[in-house]
Length: 243
Ligand SMILES: Nc1ncnc2c1ncn2[C@@H]1O[C@H](COP(=O)(O)OP(=O)(O)OP(=O)(O)O)[C@@H](O)[C@H]1O
Image 1 (cartoon, protein in one colour):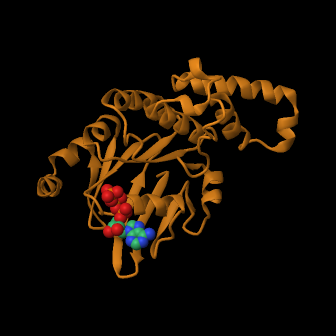
Image 2 (cartoon, rainbow, N blue to C red):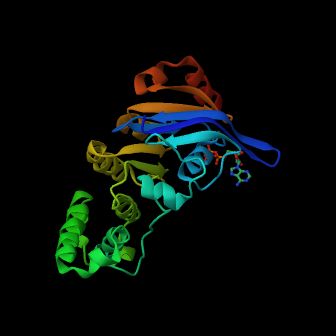
């Protein structure tokens, strides 16, 4: 397993947000985290990313116990969380935003060699092309639509070539068409990266994910392939209960 979170409990004062939750993600796997409002999805994501420290439990990544790692140490180990490490600077061009994200991964020594700069140029353009933003490379990021800004942020989160990308509700506020394109843009990264994604849009998550974990009241209700989860009676019940 690439990521293994086990027995994760998180207590905020009197509230138990997570109660022995677990999550396993393999290499090249897209894994969706779903569940009703307040079931603990974001808190589990934060415990994995290092933004919250679990009260109990263990997080392993690439066979290393990272429970006590800082977010920066996790990033160095190959984990990337959109918004956490980098975020879009609206007054800079798309090109410069991506360049900054790439440069954050390079050493100062690398940066002073022009050959590296040329290589960075190619990487910037490749990433912009991959995220269908190349034709706007030299416009300010502020001019982008909401959806395009999200794509730019995802591209920036991928600049360090992470083994695992964590996305918390990336399609929030997107149009239906932008959601569809987001699914298409994410697919190719599976060749080199796994994904843990929290999303309220169940159609979107079903379309792009290989496996799903369902949280309910801080516990794992079910975990399995998309078809296993769709056929699961207990899962159907919590979603019906909500409706
Ligand atoms: N920093 C915090 N301090 C106190 N309580 C918190 C904190 N963060 C989360 N909680 C509580 O923990 C519970 C789980 O919250 P969490 O945001 O993880 O759920 P979620 O499944 O992501 O919800 P949603 O779908 O609404 O985003 C909620 O009751 C929430 O109010």
